[in-house]
Structure formats: C-alpha cells, structure tokens
Length: 327
Image (cartoon, rainbow, N blue to C red; front, side, top):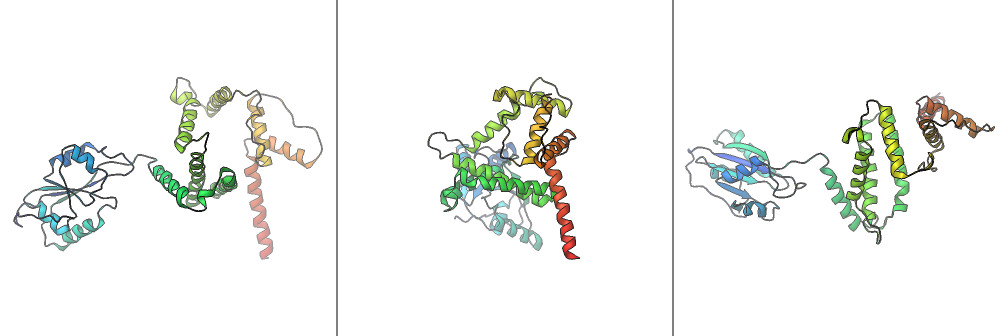
C-alpha cells in the first residue's frame, strides 16, 4: 500500500475526514447523492482495497482514487491546510483507522480534523436475506452433508421446525421465536437451492418469492386493487374466492392435506364446510374418533383451535405429573 504524506504546516486548518461506507448488498455504483457530492468535492480519495467493487464506478465517474492505507496520524496530516480526504471504507469498516483517530482525539495533543461517517448506500428491509442465499449456496457446494440432501430427505426437518416454531409462539419466548423463524426460513432457502439443480424443472428462491408475491397481491384486491374490505371476514371471503378461481376446485375439501394432525384436519374440514355455508353434520357413529371429530367441529365453530387447546391441556397435565412425581 502507498503511504500518504502532507507538507502542510501543523498549525494549518485541520480540514475534514469523510469515512464513506457502502453495503455489499447494493449494486456497486448506486451511491447516495451526498456520497457523490463528497467524492467530487474531496481533495483526495483513498481506499485500502485496490479490488473494492466501487472503484471502477468511481473512476468511471472521473474520481481519482489512491490505493492507500494511511495511519491515523498520516490521515490527520493529509487533512491539514483545510483539505478534505474521503476514505472509501473496506468491508470491515476500517476499525484500525477509526480506533487510531479516537486515540488521537482523546490525547488532546492533536488538532483533529472534522470527522464524518457518511453511509453511501443503505440496506433495504430484507437485505440480509441475500446473505442467507449466498451462505446457503456455498454450503450446498462445499458441505459434505448438505450437498447430498434431497427434498424428501429434508421433509422431516420441515415438520420438526414447524412444530418448534408453534411451541415458541405458545411459550411466548421472543428469543426462541426469532430463532425458530430462522430455522423455518432455512428450510425454505435450502429446498429452493436444491430445486435449482433439477434437470428438467429447476426453480430458484427468486421464483419462490415471485410466486408468493403474485399470490398475495392477487388475493388482496382490497389492498392492491379496487375492491373493499372493512372486516376480517370480508378479507377472508376475498381470499377464498380468488383462491377458488386460481385452483379451479370443485370441492371444498380439495387442497386440505390429509397427513396433518387429526384434530387440525378435522378443524380444517369444519372450517371449509362452515365458510361454504354447507350443512354437513358429523357421522352419527359410535366411537372415540367420532366423539373427537364432534368436539373438533364444535371448537372450530366457537373460534377455538382444537390442536392448540389440546396441547395446552396436555402441558397442564404434564405439569400435574411433574408435581405428583415431586411429592
């Protein structure tokens, strides 16, 4: 790296240092107007990384960038005489340089230049999802276990993670909830990465996201279109109506996964029947299964999730068992 120097006298005006930070999640060259203004107005522009992705775009814009990694003392000297020096920060954010400037400022022996941290590009909401996709891509390529996984082999983990997410919600543990949401998201990204390798019908995580975006927009005409909905019930009507048109279903039972837990299955069937305005009483047959079916239908009609209700009761029973064991 090249050292920088200044011939300006120590008593000259201290000048200004601008530390310019960028996000690798934003395309190079897409900088804010204050960043471009600072770059064009600077007396010198420095960057320690000669391979920084922003440099070709800065030079194309007519900005001369010096490859240099100055110490704090050298940078303060370069600003003397009222000069402005812009430092294009590397991915690490120049911690050694900023620590050195902080020590100089704290010493009280050096007349410090004006210091400014200028974010040149910002992460939009959801930007860290790009990191997840990149990490997953590398793991798929380099991890001996992950590189061999299939949709079928991962299916059990999707079920486990979904149950763990439900448990975190019911327990009210915010830290656990955040972690379990991440685990569920991992399953989505992992399956999408595997899907890219299909020889005949590949798709990517972008295709998955595009599909759900289109679905959400289409099923919310009261948000993205001219329809109106002022109650949750009207929203649900919009959703079911557009879904029926999309799927071209001939029965309210179509699309209900029969492999889900039995109480949830019974409640889902009851919900479809009630929403469709059908009058279909449960079979009048003896047996515990039919009694449970009747209870599930009743719970759904009363707005109670029978699966969650039974889990809550089971946890209470577990606590009673633990208390009995302790006594």
